[in-house]
Image 1 (cartoon, one colour):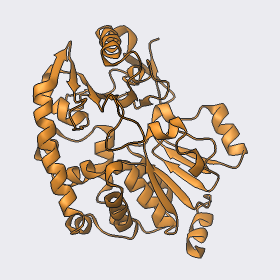
Image 2 (image 1 turned 90 degrees about the horizontal axis):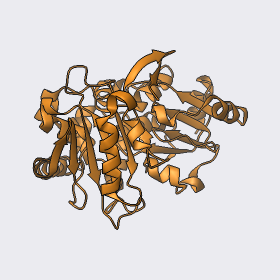
Image 3 (image 1 turned 180 degrees about the horizontal axis):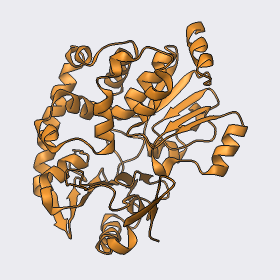
Image 4 (image 1 turned 30 degrees about the vertical axis):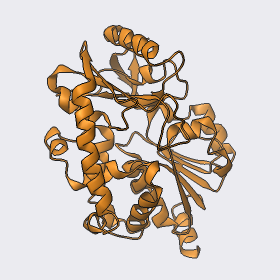
Length: 343
């Protein structure tokens, strides 16, 4: 722990013994950067709903670094880039006054933020190759041709989930200990998971083609009760020029946020980043927070839990709001680097 403590002290950063990170590629790479700074830190993967529900509270104290997740006032070091997760000035002041350290920046990815903070103090050259890919995936900047090609890095990204925690920790360990991207992709424990992700995409593609309806340039994809998941890239690639955004319904009516193999019903909203100027037009996070106070994310990519009375009622209101998007969702100006929307 001596060298880790020295590194953190040199950087003017807090010591930590625990890392809690989101369970996607961005969260994993961010956690790998932090674990490279302190190899002895324990790592727990989570998702936003688990944090907001209080399910992670027992693990969060002033020795905990949280990254790519909603703000929690009890942690010691908070790093994130989601607009709806950002603590307000009063929250941040109280957090810092109580001994916390806050790094919030509008970076393309949380991994990029962690990399920028720590790369002056530790050797992270082995992660330089994957950082642009993480940035592109998390900020909606991946090209349609690259997505359709579905290379091994995209497959690796899709293989990560709370259903496969042993796999995630193995990938994390390799990256945190200096493995290159090529070494990770060729690791014999990882190769089967990449193959699984490839097969799962084929199954998800079939659901997209059969269960997606485009309503006023919003692609609504019903993956609920289907046993498959997808982010917005698959749906918007299928929709092409016919949709400006998509809404994907995932999960099961009898699911729970605490059962990764059978998750609760949720909705995800994504701008069609494959269109020219497809991002930055509408604040989709307003849809994600319309019924669920714990929903949120980015203006262009966000999500929430389905709320009573159920999917159909939630969808009806979302579609009604979407049809009036020029008045309710349009991002029309920028002030001091922050998006300003019409009310």
